[in-house]
Image (cartoon, rainbow, N blue to C red):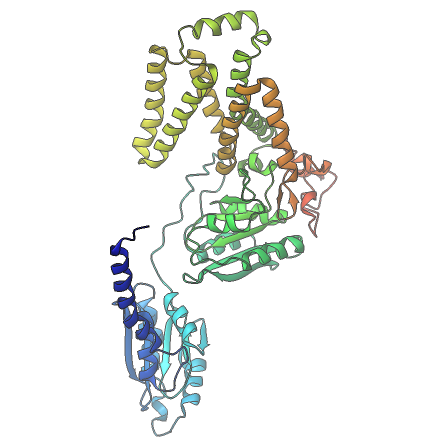
Length: 527
C-alpha cells in the first residue's frame, strides 16, 4: 500500500505544534497557593488568557492585604459584583486600620460579615475555581491563603417564557420551559408547593459540566424508580450532553426500539401532573425539553388537555386519537393488501370504482403507495425546516399541486391520494411527536408486509409489534401496561377518561407509596 506523504507531514507538523501547548499546560498546578500572583497566573494559563477574563486587584479596606476579584464578562451580574463585592471589600475593616489581621482571620471576616451575597462557598482547588468561573460565578482570591471564595453571580440573557409551539392546547396554561434550568425549576415549584418535592442536582459532561436535575415527590414516587434513574444518570460518560436527547438515548432500556421509552415535554403543567402521579422528571440545563420517566404506550395517546376539558369531551378526543393511530399505521397497508391480494373482500361497487380509478396507472399498489408516502414525508420534513410562513405554504400547496399533477399524469390513482391525505391527517392527531414518528416507521414496515403476504403479512407484523411492546420496559415498568399486564383500576384514565371524582387513585402500575389522589373516594358529597 502506497502511503501519502501529505499525512506524514501533517502528523509531524501537528506533533510539533502540540509540544509547546502541552508544555504550557504542564506549567500550572491544580493546587491553590498562598501567593495571589501564582494563583492568578494559574488561572490565566488554565483558561489560556481569554479576552473576557476580568481580573480586578485591590486592597482590603485600609489593610495591606491584596486581593483579586476574577470573573468572566457576559456570564456574571456586574452590578452585583460592583455593589456587593468590590465596594463592600474596599470599605471593609476601616475601623480596624491599626489592627494586624492574619490572612485566615481576614477571609473569615469577608465570608461572614462583608460579602452581602446569597451563596458564598470556599474553593480549595483550581478545578473548583475554574468550574465556578465557567458557570458564571465570581472568585475572590486573597493573598496569604491557599483557598478562594466563590460568589454566586450568574446572569445571562434568557429567552422569555412563551407558549410551547410543539404542544399547543386550546385550554390550559400558556407558559413553557426555557433553556435556563433555574427558571424551569421555578416553574415546577410554582405549581407544586409541597415540602416533599425533591430537587437533586448533578453535573454531566467531562468537559461541559452541565447541570442536570432529577425531580420527584418523596412519599409518592416508588423509590425503586428513583434509584434506577439515579444509577443510569451516574453511568453517563460524555464530553457534552448538548440536549436532553443525549440523556434519553443513554438511559433508555432499549435503544433499538422505535418507540420512545421516556416522554419529553416543554409544558410545566404536564411535568407537574406527572410528578403528582408518581413519576420522575429529568431537567438538563440548556434545553427546554424535560424528560419524564417511566413512559408507557397508553401515555403516548394522552394530552394534558384531557384533564382540562369535561370528561365526556376528553373521552371522545381520546377515542379519536386511537382511531387516528390505527389509520396512521394500517390504512395504506390495508389498501395494498385488499387491492393486490384480497379484492373479493371489497364491496363490488367500491371495487369497480377503485379498478376504474387505477386504470392506466403503471405501478403496482405497493409502489404507488410508497411513492406517495415518501413524497408526503419529504413535504412534511421540508415544511418543518423552512421558516414558518413558507413552511406552511409548502406543506399545503405542495401537497395539493403534487397530488393533482400525479393524478393528471396517471402516475397514481385518486383513491391513493385520498388514502395518503387521510393517513397524514391522522398522524397529526398524535400528542407525542416521538410516538407519531414510530408510527410512521411502522407504516412503511406494514406496507412491505402487505405487499408480500397481504392481510396475513399485516397480521404477522401486528403480532410481532405486540410481542415487542410486551417485552419492552421503561425503567422496570412494562411498556404495555395497563393493557398487559392488566390493571383494571388504571383503565379509568386510559381510553376513556372517567370523571375527576372517580379518579381517586394514582396509577397502579407505578406502585406508588401514596396511592390516594383525592379524599372523596365515593363520589362528590352534597351539602
